[in-house]
Length: 497
Image (cartoon, rainbow, N blue to C red; front, top):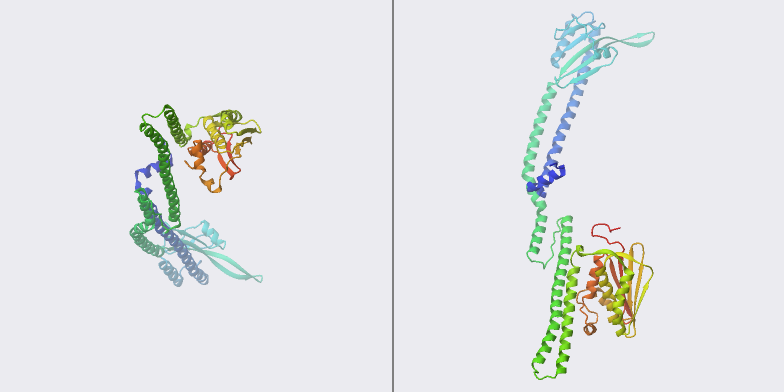
């Protein structure tokens, strides 16, 4: 099976856990920072020294041979090589630079060779030809360890009042670079020794430094483990680095959210227990009262049984609302999305609720600006409309009204449910969507409210990726505004077209 380089790397990291450790990365990084620059520096320094040493050697040797070139002309050595003084100088130069010296005359013949091998032979090469044109040359043969250079033997005179120079011959010489190589080898050994010492120090020091540098992360881990074990009463603080501070801040925010959720859960459980217990307590009281009156008249029995039936219905409504909340808390996989005529859905919802409104002498009005079709879960959307309109009717005044306004643009449809009811105070705004929260608890008891309707409504709106807002004036009325996308938007993806 073909595997990409990235997949291969991930497989290696899984099999060798140490390579995923930040300590390992710090160790490798510091080792690289300590060793690689020293290796590069050593190579750079040695190369620079070699170039400089060769350049100085060429300059020194060339200067010496220029002096000898003048002596050759003075002693007419190109025509007569018997001069002991010149021969001694040439031998001395040959020995001094551990090289070879050849004197070439104007007809390219070798008149003198300190190695006594090529005398009388003809020497024609690119360097020699260039030198006869007045250009000194030098060539460094690194592999064989010598420098080869040419120096022109130039005769200067005057002709027709002008200074004229003429090349009479060429000095072809070589000089050994053994001393340069020896110096470089000494430098190389010392640099290598220094690198070894540095590497040993790094190998000994870096693990300790890596441990110190990663210590704050260990404290973060320890604090998180304490929270995992149940110690959630204190926040963590690791201000060593900006990064650990950010991690600690993010974790503390998460911890605060966990505490809030835990408190909400405890409050929810307490509220559920209370709400479920209250009807059962009423049923028990009514039943006990009947048991204590074995000779009670039939009318009293009928009255008590009606009360018991109401309490059972109330208990059943609470249980149904709780089940609805549980369904709302599930993933969007439970959503049955299809194209729905919102106008028709609202009409059918209002048709079911108008009898309730007529009992309370509340007028229900539906205003639609345009036909609207949207991709929604019809059951959940019906639940949203039912809860909002039913609340508007129940919490209304005598001879009041409820208006349902429908409008849409190219992205969203909006439903406004306004009423002339008792209104909501500002301090209740932040809690009206909380589970079991009631603005008017005594009135809610009278009309059978469970305190779960708005919580269910908000959950259903959020499942549709929509929003719900409320505005109200206490004593004058309330307006809920629901805004839902026309095309259902999946989490992390695009809506269906």
